[in-house]
Length: 342
Image (cartoon, rainbow, N blue to C red):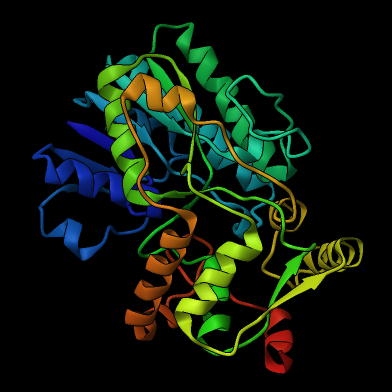
């Protein structure tokens, strides 16, 4: 049996779908209900908060593999809860895995643990320098994983670049909304920097392979087909066929303004967004290709277009689903005023 924490979230639900397609038994641990397509498969949904140590430990009984994907993400601006959920929640699930003899754990970390000022591409051996409260919590969770490896658990740590695909919303929901309505798309810097994305279905498949082929590894993962940010976004705008255009902003002024708006709670963007998206940020994925015999197939442009098309097809339901996860639309706050004059 496969236990997925955060199994109703963007990454977790796609791992669940992939496992179900392979005829595997799945149990989801999440305070939110899973999607209807998952419910129809009669999986077990455990309405358990990852911070509830006793219930989380009990939930691990009978699990062969655990995919630990539950996490508060940057747009949640969760403060202290980042630590409670991302770090202590990880400790809870690993304690349960240790007690019940779970065979393998896939821990979903983040590229936010990496030093964004290093020369690219980054490898698994590149310097670690977490950014913001979210990044620090994810790196602390990795340290917890290393701690439990020493106790005998088999834990593979996965650091994906920005994950896209059908159902991806969050800050990308803002991008799609503005393009749909022909608004200017503002980027920090000249857009010549390269940013790597990762397709959700390919990430799910890679995680499943990790339970079968490797032990106690760390993997950086993303696509190997990407170009300058302005070119990838330009391809999406061309596909959309709207009047949107890319407007480049002075980094110093833009970051300073966004930092103030962030502190005042007037912007949906967190430090992770406005401090990283104007820089090169991409992984060397040689290790994951070699060890899993795995190859990504989607390019950045293809991911953006597919995600945007899903947004168009589900617009009516998307616009009323507001929250702070990657499967929800996010409130634009003061950015809505900028949207109005763009």
